Length: 357
Image (cartoon, rainbow, N blue to C red; front, side, top):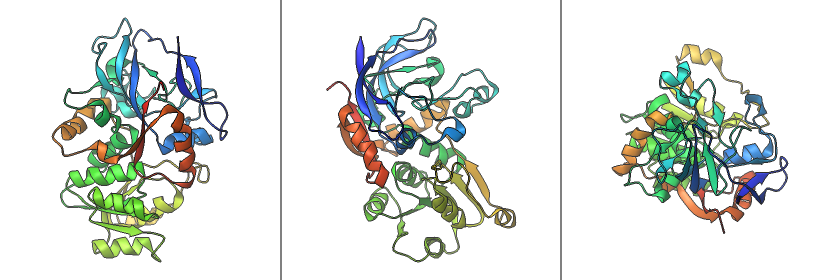
């Protein structure tokens, strides 16, 4: 049997919805019917052919999409803890469950990491069905109280921002947190940092994104195109610099501005990955890191074993992924949504919820 999927045939060329074979479960895997899949700037980067410098460049033809939630429809013979009919969250950072990193609770950076939708080994989730390897590790059963619509907003951007703010940034306690870049990851970070007790400042070039940041809890915003020096603005707002900075975009300007926004003893969380302009390299003020004792940490995805924290906060209403969902689209609209990201013309998170029309 075949199914519909968004297929990357050639980098930077128009994406097409095609009929492809449905996946079969490996012995340790499951197949899920996709209920929702966020449309993310990371998909745009993959379509452009970026990120070969760290192995996230699949060989076309390849199915894109890495932010799914789904319902299990087929279970491999060796799977023990996942059952047919379960609704699951599906991390993009697939883990083996056996290496030292996995065994020490860092399965998001597993030694045998496979990126869903970004690597040949894991065809993506802009499709009617998706395969999840090592399902006992990588499929996260959802509590009954979290519906598929809410879960569809929990994809890469939301769960990545949760790990970045709660674990890597350890934000809270009234700290000043400045988020540079208010796209899907940035707005998620604003919402989550606010829920964790921080005072958040959003920085972007577009007023509509800054307005959303304020709706999601930002106490102040800075339009970097309207001021001479956005870093000085942040220092003025925070009376000397932020406790925590976030680069949620990954270009040289936002990374450097975020680091420069910090006060002494501050910590920077790098979530955004760079573009073909930087190719993974950004110049940073190394001596200031020493003199000011600045911490610089990277943050990738979220461990499946720690999803329960985020899901608990969603269940009790402290976090609401649906607040980030800008609109829902069908599979035939996904190529246009990705194309709009070329000029940053999306606010919040578009989610594909109809895969068979």
